[in-house]
Length: 143
Image 1 (cartoon, one colour):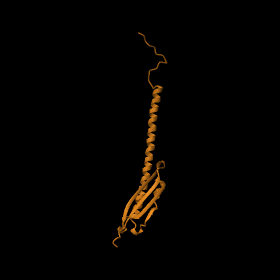
Image 2: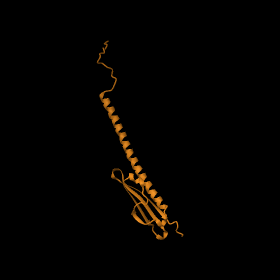
Image 3: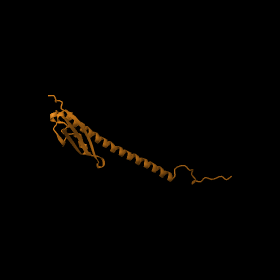
Image 4: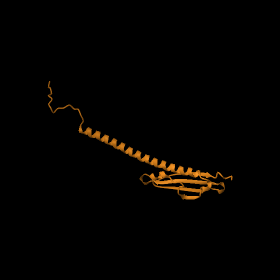
């Protein structure tokens, strides 16, 4: 029987080859890039939701403020400004609040239609809008 003599250049086949190392680095890179993209996508969506929440809250505050006023103080206007300033709108790009107050159908009903809306520029230059419409009745109608 022949016995093989091991010399100093003969090593066991342990470790990684260059191709295995490159493949592992590629898989790791793709995974990291995917994670980074998902993170940025999530942050963009969170900012969009925060902006929408700020706008919705400002619209609802305006509606509630008008509900608390006397009916005679509700003067008709078309695309006017908010009667109370909305301080949170500073974080919205090109925010434009508008308020429309008009009599609803028959003036004898003493009912006003109130619409408050806010438009702003969102992600990628898209125009975003939040609005609310309500009806306010003259509570002092009998007097």
